[in-house]
Image (cartoon, rainbow, N blue to C red; front, top):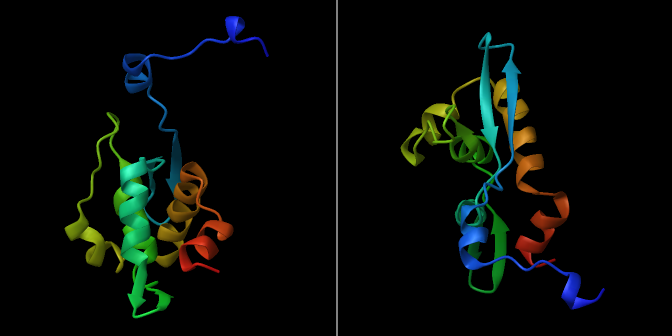
Length: 124
């Protein structure tokens, strides 16, 4: 493609774009809707760091409360602000597995987290 016809974004244009997808999900167990937002790049790094444990040269997955961790990062209010904090992860882990799994699946999809990403995190 001829570069004369390409549109290049400026710094300001890039920073102003709202590029975080959302999806409203009905949770039967709660009888209500929640809004799920895809991760920001910084949140994805934080999430990945929280589930990887390095011991010497070996790398292991720490799957403890993985659903609750992702739900805490991705459930937002109508304005796109997180409604849970990192301190809520343990309490969220005590909620319905079905409810969290439904939100987790949507959050994974919106954030582009695939099984291949998990393998890459482990260095396989």
